[in-house]
Length: 343
Image 1: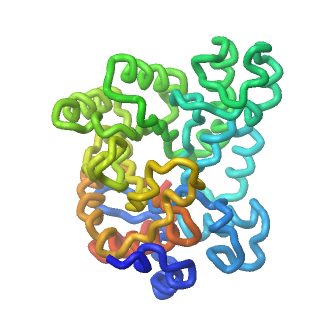
Image 2: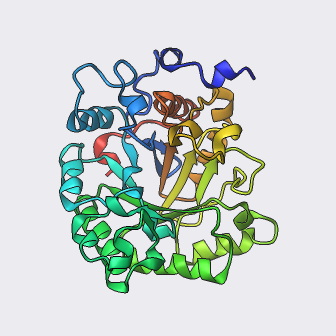
Image 3: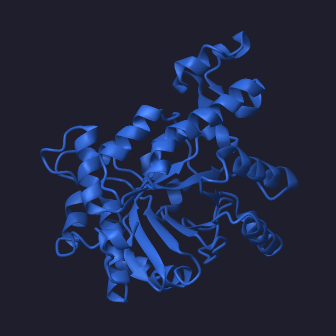
């Protein structure tokens, strides 16, 4: 397919949904499941640029979230991977969204074995760092004293309590990096995460190492997640690399199924030294989205809630594809739910 099809620019992307602007505005009822469609960002600079997605009057964080929440019933918070959220931030998200809105929140890097920029830790935690860690540019959770590592989890969980108490927290997404492969240590880390985040807060797991689903490990991986009722995050992503999981329907929790679309931009997926948004600069064709309609419908037969998240958040590519796949699901028999039905 010509490259222009997958990177045509914001204006062309907007034209594709000119007649279905509100297709994703409410959750859909498919089988017995409530299916919510949204994107994995509402704040990327390419998305907030004038004339791309937001109206002219939406110029600050509050206005943008209110507008986004008027168009979609679900969003993934990606910023929490880079910086720990605060209780005040959670309260702001709660106040700026309607009662039936849902947040999925990405776990902080330190919670999934990945490094964090030291300067982005809250000052209260930085002030407690041992002298040998203070000047490090990046740190790992394994480097931290146990009391500070415990505080990272407590800080994160505290920030989510306003959303959780109001019924607006969908799940915490634990995205494990490419160097986490199937092993007893990795499964122990997931068990520990389940305990630390609290059994009252839903979590979901996404892997970035293909060996979790290879012929040798797939059954054990899914059985392990099933035994803890942790949703396996189904992905659409570039194929042919070590991080490439196949597009598989696997529902490991009766409460929630999660599907994330990363785009199929193979040449930038594992490239180094590029802006993160360039990995996801990919507009799906309608035919590509259509491949997932029966898969999502199948997932809806096994879970009470299904979250469909477009992570191709360059400009309006994610919002365009979210509206398109919602329209496809509705057209194949997925009526929109009234607000009181989706609570």
